Every structure is written in C-alpha cells, then in structure tokens.
Length: 69
Image (cartoon, rainbow, N blue to C red; front, side, top):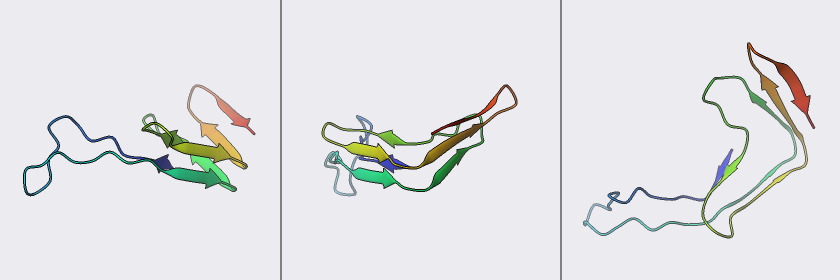
C-alpha cells in the first residue's frame, strides 16, 4: 500500500514539464501480507502524506515469520 508520489528528477510530462509530486492518505483496516524479498507493507511519500494501520501487517520470510499487530 502506498500513499503520495515523488517523481524522479528527470521525470517529465508529455509536454516536457516536470511531473508534480502529490500527497496521499491511506488506512489499512484489514491484513497486509508482506511475503517477498522486496515487498513493502505500507509506504508514504511527500510531506503531509499519511498512513494509518488499524489492521495487521504480517511479515513472512525464510529468515523469520512473525505477526506485528
């Protein structure tokens, strides 16, 4: 789950203007399973973006298996 957008420095619109960053807001009220090596649970970018976890984020890995609620 992700909120907000931060464009790369060279990221341009079709007309050549720089892309605009924006904020976001997400709320998890269920279960997020993080299973892959490069997986994320919840992520927010840009100032004033918010994320709220009211549910469960379960990390499943070869190295460990634990539930952070």
